[in-house]
Image (cartoon, rainbow, N blue to C red; front, side, top):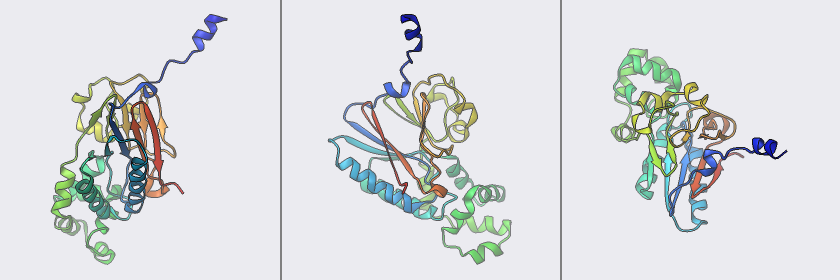
Length: 255
């Protein structure tokens, strides 16, 4: 009987053992995708939550994909730049949509075509261009228009985004990691684009991976990873993971 009980005992999850260094509190925000309305709501929640807890060095990490799909990517970037200026301790990860945004900003036709296909249409329309003008432009003309449409401050801001952030037992990335490789040796392509090769691995990684990129209705806690992309651009639910010590909790904009 004792042997059977021992065999049934579940090994501790890496998530449950992971910790943030003493005196620090981290809020990680999932994929915003142009929903400035939801971002403003979630930031209010974060600021309120932070003010009601014990003193700590707090910081906010955006997991990437601030732009595309939703209606106000330009507004999201303005909000993100403003809160970095006001709060200071705010960091941003480069998502695959930011990567394509920067490529499209060069005015290269192929990049603008791809950008347009994956949600960039809504980003373009969040700037100073009417639907009428957008419709009337062919792809060559649109590429040239985009080259002069995105403000330099937005381009420079996105270009400053990081590829990964490690704090304590957690690593924050946009899409995931290539299993078996140290965080320091990960390729940008994997950090921004990987999916199945990361999601199907159950073994523990070097760190617990906090990521966005792959949409789920609810937060995913899978032992070696925590996914917090809850499809804000269509679901209305933008999610943040909060971490302090060994504690974790969630905030979101669900009605």
